[in-house]
Length: 272
Image (cartoon, rainbow, N blue to C red):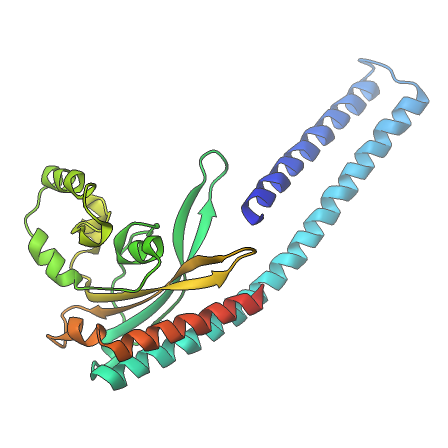
């Protein structure tokens, strides 16, 4: 109901603004002598103007209070999620021997943006834990796009050696990229080398990650479970461990990632 309710509130605000404008013009015209209203009609217009002013002021006050409460709640959620991600990274370090400083973990949530009929779904980072600075991919991921998007679309844990994919696609032109995507539409999503990315998105992301593990965040809806987003762990480049793909594919690492995703889902559920 959230996205639709936001649109209803937007329409209501615009309607109130239009009514206030009409009432204001009517009263101004009456004062200027352009048209005349009876004392009773003038009172009703003035009362309507005052009521609209009160309504907009009250709504703004309530929205500010809700925004402040939401900001506090968001900070608490981010703190809880950060603790879970930090614990996950150290657990992976213990299981694989990969230095925690060469790892990063992120939680992406599905959100809808825009106004109907041009609403779009994207994956927005909620919290990211990294112990060493590095450049970001610079791409807003969407369901079905990239390792993160594929994880959300398929609803299952994925481990992808993106450095190997970059080597296979080295030298690919934009035209060849489009032809490859055309052929991949006939294949299962798991076999797609392009991971649903555009050529420009691949250019921005290539060379920044070595291996990416992504596991879905599963929440409980009114009637069935739903994918809220995903938890991802990435190994930075240059890869400090030549066998990092096999290490992240280990059953113990997969279990740790799934357990962290379950814990984070509980944190998100407790905040709503």
